[in-house]
Length: 306
Image 1: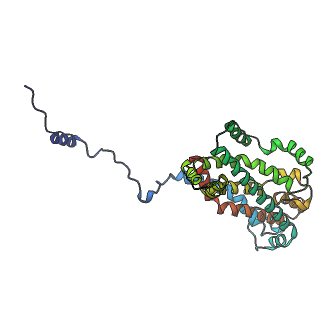
Image 2 (image 1 turned 180 degrees about the vertical axis):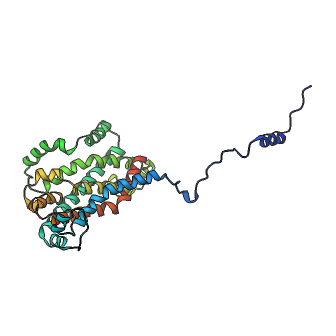
Image 3 (image 1 turned 120 degrees about the vertical axis):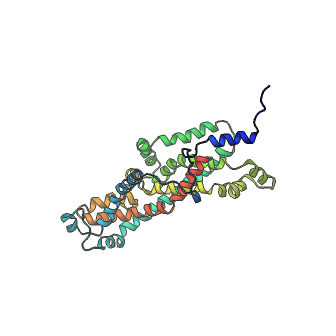
């Protein structure tokens, strides 16, 4: 005869008794509030070095604008002694700087409006409608990311010249819109594709037209992506240098990046004033990007999830 099996409680107790207590691995509990564990000191050291490499040249340009040419000649890497704001005052009170700021602002705002408006409408069709050749059309826009402006600058110059847009901001704005469309569509299509079909069906049942659904539902739901693409288009236009260099020959139509090069050539002897002009020209883009950095990251994260 076979012995009866031991009760379940006794078997559990035996297993519990034989389990080692001192050498058992302990699981690390997550910290309160979902805080991430502290990284190694080497990671922070590398981060500090990278940040210093990026910020030191910017700081040198900004501080150099408060120096005189004599101070720069005697000690190129020193601090101002005394601090002199005359270079910044001369640049701000002159008409050249503000005229170029206005040209850059007009080009950036027009480029942003055109890229976001056209990109949103094209993305809506590609994301919400099924038609023959939709994948090919989307791939065509995606292929636009592989062709930089330097490759197309010569044929682009010929097209702009034939259209009679040389030495005008229109000759800069239209190509910038075209080159900003691929990025805009790639980011916006996932946002629009993630909108549930039930919302669209409910809107049509309530009597909403396709255009009304676009303005009342699609635009608010895709607002993070719209803001992200708008910021990218604005910064790209503000920092554009190669295209204005080929299109604009009239100094009155210069944008700010092209104006910095022209100002540096004109006042090459006055190094302190050139540093002041350069620092003032890059401050708007730095401030703009710093204010909307989280918007950019949030919009790109939503595009990846979509």
